[in-house]
Length: 217
Length: 114
Image (cartoon, rainbow over all chains, first blue to last red; front, side, top):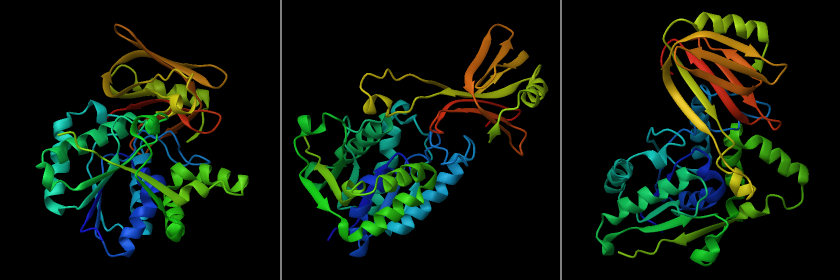
């Protein structure tokens, strides 16, 4: 059992598809989870299906959705870091790393979950993962928590090899689907399209994949 | 938001001219466009709380609509606008939603910073 899990992602809903099953399993074991979410997804293009948000109301709606998703998963410590969606790669990486270092020092996690820098498609994902790696690198190598990275770039397996952790989360799939549905403005269209397709359209949600970050220095 | 009614938007645009106002302008095709379609050339631009003053603003088109704002030394314009809303803070929000309902462009004006 982990001592404490720290999750760092840039957008509300980043946690839902890739890792919410894993998190729900940790929560069921009683492991405390801290989720540091860098932005409120202010620049999302999905406004609801049919649209019920606009550019100015979207962050407020997504904040509520994120809280509901955390409740569904069993995360009781949500930190909103207040950066702006789509600006993470332009921020001073030291500034973001400082914020993450402070949370690491406070929560003393045995496991950190984030995006694999360079293999996570969205510039915010890559910059978030890079800042987390940078923050953890400040800790002496032998004392660092384990870092599990999510990656989904087309070349991730080619460059990184197969994920070393492939977890079946079907035991908590209801919690995972509840977390995804909590992000209603972003996922309602997608989920209704998937249920119309029927069959095993949601089968891929039952497996979560991670690459353990390997330290070069 | 509601579908744009050109006369109403024009009336509101006129109320913002000749004074310092704050502009939000963005175009976006989404951060995943090139991931889902490798041949896609991803491009976009974004400005939030640009302080501007325009002497003349006009909405044209048959839907989707275009808006141009004439500055002392230049221009601002957006195309593909489909929906609009006035907020209770007196902000004019205009957006263009694509055929799937996703936001593709936004042009917003406010008397106070967003």
